[in-house]
Length: 378
Image (tube, rainbow, N blue to C red; front, side, top):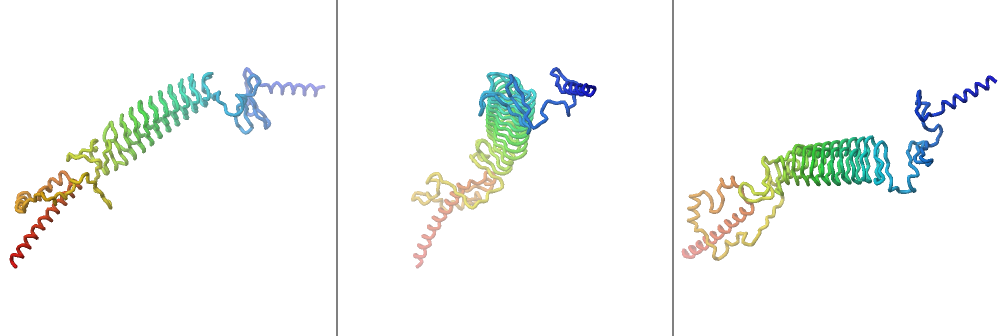
């Protein structure tokens, strides 16, 4: 009888200790007190006596009975964030404080603490990283990957941002691409900018259609449009550049005027140089090439008019007098002019040809006189 009483007491004590109190438990020991299974079976969770989720022995979370099998188009998945809203579907949220103010947005993916925390509307956004799009109010089809990427983004469409604090403050732009630490960090307004490289366009407040590839390029400019910067630590000529080109500080441009080499001053936007002529290409330190071809605009641009019957040659005595007085041939620039203004290759070649043709005519005339004198002597 005594053994029987002891056995019944042990069974009652084991049964009592095995109960998990739904109002709370004290004195728990994690190795022995837990919710779960002791055999190779899944842990099942139900609502309304219908299985909704299970944790398999291999650690996978499986959601069941959400709808029919196959693709699901009318549900949300929330872990530690999100907000129940019957008009919002296809949102996936993992993170404390993430996506907690949505009212109509659908198809958004928010992963990380406080991601899209005040977004009220917008579709198809993807944000990954603590504080990514945390203050975004609206916007669709934006991608933000990195801590505080698009942090204070207000609204806009089609922006792709990868990097901590990239496009982090208050932008309302569209179709911008920013890759790297603090790229386009302070952009407020601007569209279709592409910037790849840490710290590049960091201070840009407003600007559109810029391309920036490389580390810390145009880091401190406030505004600018239609610029192309490729390289490292490139500083534009202007604090507010427009249509500038700079590739590694050895190919530069301004509004379609291109320069090769190091230039102290910015190239003229209209291409007009100090000599008053317009050029599209400026080159420092010379050009080496196997072939140069120069187009002639019209037939009268060549020097063959010298051979026309009505062409008047300057008498040789006048040529001699001009040389004695000026120290150079008629029409040919002086040394000082050549140094100051340079030489236009096409015009100089035509001028030299003209002088050769004139010299040929002088030689022919002299030959005729020589032959006449020889005949007279004989």
